[in-house]
Image (spheres, rainbow, N blue to C red):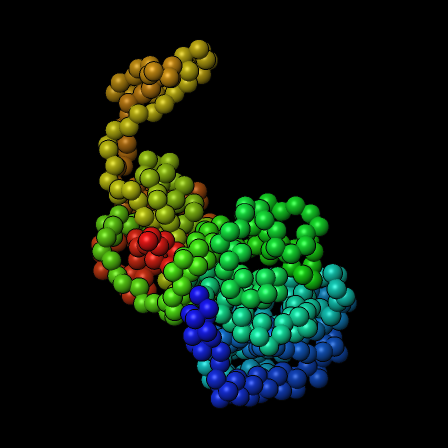
Length: 443
């Protein structure tokens, strides 16, 4: 393992020339924002945040975060209004746009570097008024705690998480954030120790110091906020993927855990993928990702109610115009008839109700070996494409989150994965139908 880790460090540590370029861009952006805050007495300061400030940034994904600190007394609406003005005016040469977390912030791109101009309140530790208020404290804590060697260990861990597709705290990913990576290195001391510890982690194990109990698969405590469990934002699937990947890396260490591996498109099970495509009016990426994922969950439930066995489901959006809901079904065609299970024959009132409701639709009724009344009935739809098409046509308010209903009213398409898919959708479909050897490895 040590040999692979040594080789991996050469891949993850930025070159001196890249570091120089990144510093120039950061200083340029900082100067532009600094010039704008002079006009606002509500602003008390400015500072770098995120991975750039902490020296844990990666070559391919090094955003520059600039935090505008506001007086505590500034109302929320003014806080948002002024921060957007500062962001747009300072970044006007670089096509700025609004992103959303708890509060809106402005993002732009200078050369190949994203610059985030983020508002926060200038509060005392623990007296948070917005979620961004913790960020300056995170930065100061990590700058104090991380040694130069540990910063490179963080880079190793971040790259490992990226490679296994579980890096990023955004709604689209629900994975491990850069800050969580830093917290893990602080707690375990090195990348190697993280691998060894996570591969043997127990359910509900606490990493850090907790002041209360949390109900998540693992608990990762925020060192500057003892009431905050960082793992609450991480999906259970991604927790599992990390644990499995750590076990595989320990057993079979390889540089493939630190490189982007182009997925091979597999036609296996494509005929079992159901796709719902719709266009949406432009909105914040975080909002459309959240809505798309909720829609996938809602329709997954309805498919199950309709008798279709949904093995996996996901949502995807290009963040510009198109969104997709994808479902891997056991089969897109199911039997036209099914057994509807009723009550135990001792429950007289329930039996009368069940018989009354189903006698006009039943083809056959009997008592099974579990003392239940059973009714054999025809399905309205045994074809998944037709089932979803009809369901959306007649039950839009039930099947789709409120925020997407107007988008669906303008039109949608339902089809199987055997249809010609765009490159990005092929990749998403491929994730549903392929096994990641970095997670599931057998000797």
